[in-house]
Image 1 (cartoon, helix red, strand yellow):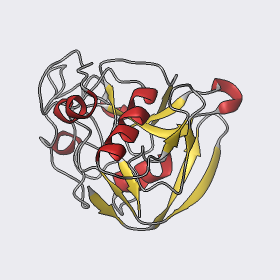
Image 2 (cartoon, rainbow, N blue to C red):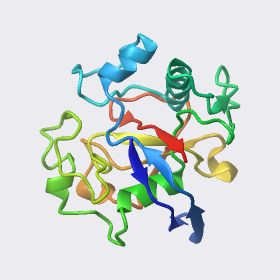
Image 3 (cartoon, rainbow, N blue to C red):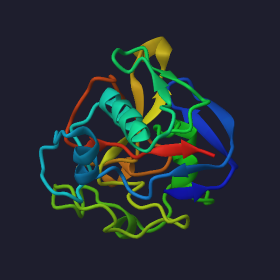
Image 4 (cartoon, rainbow, N blue to C red):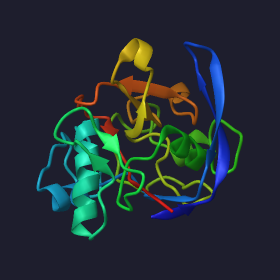
Length: 213
């Protein structure tokens, strides 16, 4: 886990053309997306289409991701961050000290790592995308990290965030960030948002974990 400093990030919504600022307290974020080896150790499951211990786990839904967070928390004797994980009405217990998904604001703040640019370096140096991936996933950590030591924030797999995307239009759909191995370069930018239903599974979506404090 990497310690991420407090800060402020500006989020924007293309549909509503609205922007808003979020103040963030310090938190910790996984240096890499959760790997297939770690996911299998905690859950006993291997859902990914591609196989490799150090490949990011994919084929996991948002609900799978929050269940993993709770399972990992219990394994380490921490208070689970989520309630109601057996249904779709999951609640985040802010008092829990366990593992959780990053908020959308936390994700973008961590991705930018103190920069104001769309990317934290030349894209081919920092990300696996459609132009250089050979149309497949790659092991985590194979590209240059950002200034805070976080790898694969862009490219390789999209990452689930905690937040609802746009409840007025998309209901319970959750936010995805980061771009993936099959995406064109324009999708691999710090501000790009995607969405999907919390039960959705596909071979270019994974996640990384966060902890408060």
